[in-house]
Length: 180
Ligand code: IMP
Ligand code: MG
Picture 1 (cartoon, helix red, strand yellow):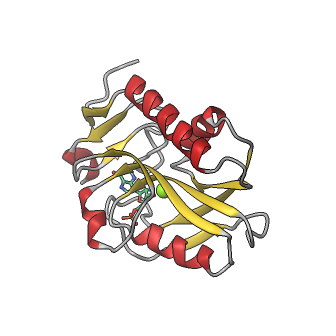
Picture 2: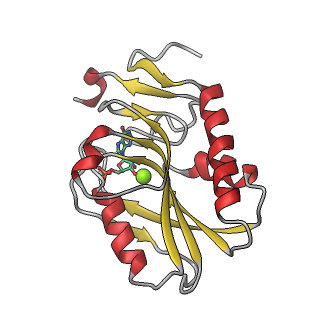
């Protein structure tokens, strides 16, 4: 593979990612033991995280997906969230855990939490692999967080820039020139 000049510093190495996913799954398995857990993966960024996380759980669970769009191909959140694909099934009375790739401004998650809370789940929590510092501006708590990362635009392990770089096994910074 040729070196991609748009890729900068690696923020989370592949083995650290895998270790942390196992830890999060162990924690969630303990917390949800004996409960009817439904994972909601947020497409497309969370695909690898959901897949690895779900396989690492030691309890049974179901999975559903939602696709929402907040960025288009830009690197700044617009705050305008659109549902591109809704859930297949109702979540009323279910213990729902939203599995997100990254919380940046928190606007996407805030919208999602409001929307899903209206559907009357038994409980509603968030598991985010990555969190940027800005998200603390919005009053929003993710119960499970993989890594706190600096305020840089990152790609890999599901995260893209204009649909590229999702398949990288690690998370790396995208250099400024690539986003201009
Ligand atoms: P928020 O609404 O600003 O929290 O943005 C959330 C969504 O924007 C995430 O689910 C990602 O899809 C995308 N996003 C935010 N930061 C990044 C990044 O650094 N790289 C790639 N996608 C990002
Ligand atoms: Mg996303």
